[in-house]
Length: 155
Image 1: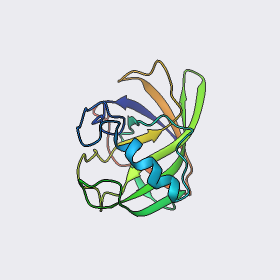
Image 2: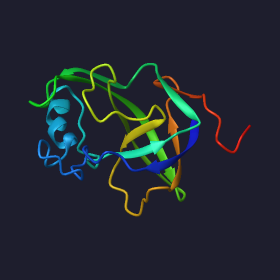
Image 3: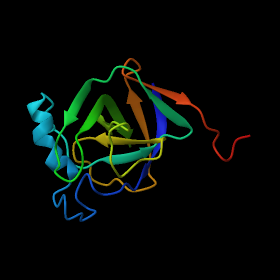
């Protein structure tokens, strides 16, 4: 399924932009070695996320490409579970393949996301800005995107 989305500012902790002293190089840098030990190589991707608002859609987890359980990646928070789903981002007639990165809401300790926000792991893409409109395409067998909200300009 393809849906339109808007690039939004995130918490900045995945990439390290937030300057959180617990994760000076970002949470993804700290997590990546643990993911690799479980068979998920993040080396093709920039270690930061692109946050997309998919409203008026929300998502339902079906069969993730990867589900990593009980990842004890930080001494500051309890172990977490992580979901990953295939995704393609389309912008300016270019396409980029990557993963939706989703800490399991049931085990996530902090930095919660709005339910219409998806975090994408992609190769480094120059020229993206907050507010840019993009299209994403997901594997319908892995994650379901369903229209649940009305846009403010719709009745």
